[in-house]
Image: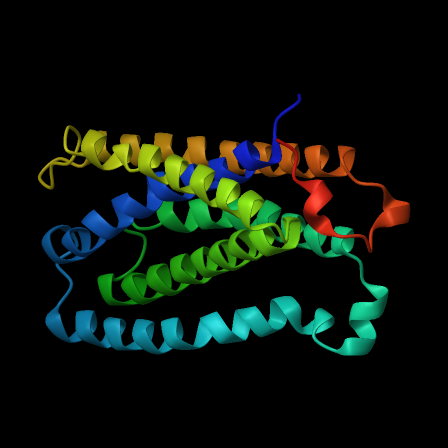
Length: 225
């Protein structure tokens, strides 16, 4: 399958957005109105989440890039190696992100414990996706024009993905969650399969336009139109 890098890159935003907007709109209502979480557990959960959210960005960023930070290491690591490592990270974090999204909509523990675990897992995998997806824009090209193209594709797919919110209104009913849960399962499957497939396509397309013998060259040439 032949596909331009910018389309494959941008489509990853779609598979993230169709889930994330549902999360933002319904996760609090789910725990407060349906699971009946008590106020103490809710606010304790929010405090734990705020601490986790403030720490995971720099920690995950350091873990992700620690092998490339020293000047000695950077001389021996080419652009192709960095891009492929980021794609491999997206290949496993994407599916785990979708599964962590699904964990919100079926009660499997006491509300307070489930609230904390779901929030931290979901935010952790979302952070990893955002980190590697955003970094790929810089890794794939140094051209302002090419980066604008990648960013515009990503924004376009995000807008399309936000349509899941409008669809959700037809399924949300806190007194009978069966159809809403089915809707969430469908979104999860679409996102999981789409994420895995498009990362594979992006990786294959990237490799088709690179030469391992020239992996230290400027990454501008890697983005095809």
